[in-house]
Length: 168
Image (cartoon, rainbow, N blue to C red; front, top):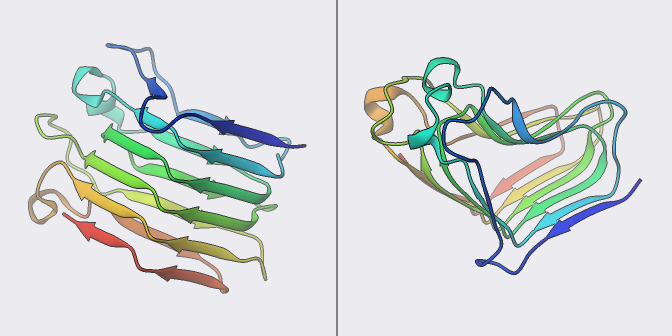
């Protein structure tokens, strides 16, 4: 399988409507696995200030995918009050690259939910590689009061986490 989703950054915007019904993730493909995924040059707006359900469950995710050879790069994810921005997770997950993305207004100011967040989460099969480099993360509210809003969480060996900037 091959999947490429791309736009003309920053003009290509995917935005969640006001008061959406419950959703787990915007892009979700866990079974069967999907390989050779390339998502780039998009703006993804969770519109959390207008999503009442997210303040109750905070189960919002931009991306949840299991597979191999996956790239998420040069995207702007904003206004998210979920627990994972880019979640590559599963028994087939390998060769993941999350590079040069911008994550802003994470844990949106003005929403009452208090929780931590792993904005980048990678749990892959043994021996596989992951590269998380050159991303910028900005919390919507002070992490001191509400827990880590912009964490990077990896599992297993062969992970390179470098040159990322985190505020909040």
